[in-house]
Image (tube, rainbow, N blue to C red; front, side):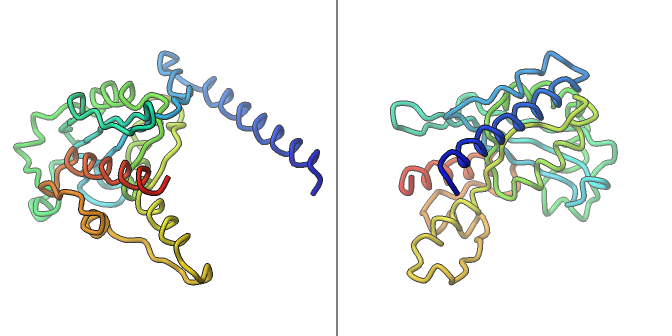
Length: 222
């Protein structure tokens, strides 16, 4: 393909991306959240959700943890002082059989905030930043199940999964590029890179561990 064709294709893709963004932004039923479409370079938000199960159609978010990450002067830093930890009040109380998974009892979530209150706190925190997580697509499906009716559109944020990032790094190190490298579980990744393990089943702890892993991978494998 000629150089001119490459440039034309790049311009076409940028135009289509901007057109799609403008169209989505016009569908907002809450125009005050227009800033969500304004990307913020060199900044990320590590996000984790605790849910009652894995189906966004039948299960519910119980808690949210988020930590911001910035790249400044060649250094990645986590803002733990301004981290976000929210317990939500689901429409259905969690089944006692699932407490061992998420660690939240009905009494813990009864005094939680509504989903609209959670979004009012979380969305400005995320803004236009890339969302980092482990199995981040799953978290985003749950979040969009609430954000889409609240905003009128799904969240436009880019996402980055730390397990995929690690997989790509290890794949590059393979002498034989045809040898498939499997993704690892979060705990396996944390142990591999000697990142401290915080108490499990806590959304903020998981968000912080994911943020530490993200910083480590970018520092050692830019």
